[in-house]
Image (cartoon, rainbow, N blue to C red; front, side):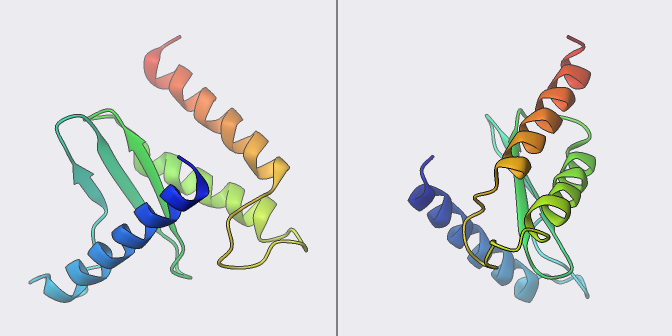
Length: 114
């Protein structure tokens, strides 16, 4: 996906997330955290500041919540501490990209046993 596609998906998800918070019969609902489809699952983690992180994975994949929390830690370590990063802008940080790739690869190896 290019940047525009990513922004469209994020915008759509943000709207669905906000609507689900308002329509939920459960008091204190924080919105949609998991969208299950036939061919994929979409997991969402919302930080205390409102920034949302997503993982798209195979249906039934385990430990995605833990992976999302690790991704958030990487975000705080490599993006928020970057003096050139502007909040609410696409992330363009080589250290974050590298460590994110390493984390996802390590997670895939652990999940698949390879």
